[in-house]
Length: 331
Ligand SMILES: O=C(O)C(=O)Cc1ccc(O)cc1
Ligand SMILES: [Fe+2]
Image 1: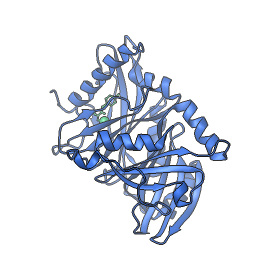
Image 2: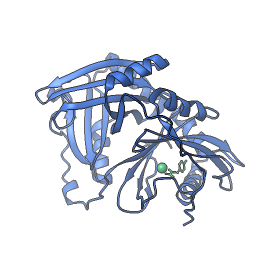
Image 3: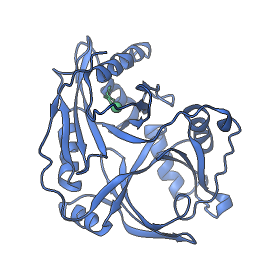
């Protein structure tokens, strides 16, 4: 496979932020139609294990949360309970507009105050100011901000917590009799999370991370560098100072036919998370979209002393998605 480096690597990370540190991806929150069943699917098909549960049996009346884990990667699937609840309306509207999808990407942070104070000064939309949750295993502090589309980022300070996941969560509810019998997939951690942006909004999305979270440009590629017979794309990867959190941002560039990024936007109804790449010791594998809409999917990736994004991988995936896009009548 052609894996020559392409695109632009940036060497200037800018000044190290004086205060506040992004430690790693914490977990991914998905809003879905049937959280219990989606969680079970990720266990049976993608090597996750049931991790924790919050719902009616633990005293939570409004939202069911099923957390599953593989290595360091945690996905939490949520669905609303009450037919006429306030949260049900919010989650229901989200579901109608977007289908199943990623609502929130959370980061474990150090010095939450400094990060939130800086975000406020810069004019970031604060969805929920600093709050605390507590149970017998300790205390966790959070804050939530708005990023692209309806997607949010939650900052999590879990330095004073030793429970299984988060306060209020109990033992997992789903029991998967299949998973102990399945081979280890060996997924370790989240390598990158990609956000698709409507045309001409990628640059602003990248600036949002640079200006508000003090991330820097790590790599970028333009529509002349990544192109297939039918279309092309532009992408900017932003990263935290330590470069263990990478957030590529794509935007469509139509060629002869419709870009796959545009297909995503058309079906998600706005900017949103396109794929989550999980790092493991095997070759790159891409799942198909995991719901009926051609929106979010998962990438399993191996890195051999190369932290960038290679031409071969990128183009192979790009072409593979175009074939399916054609079958859907969307190319
Ligand atoms: O290099 C990677 O990790 C990619 O994931 C490349 C990529 C990103 C977006 C696409 O629509 C197609 C391919
Ligand atoms: Fe990727």
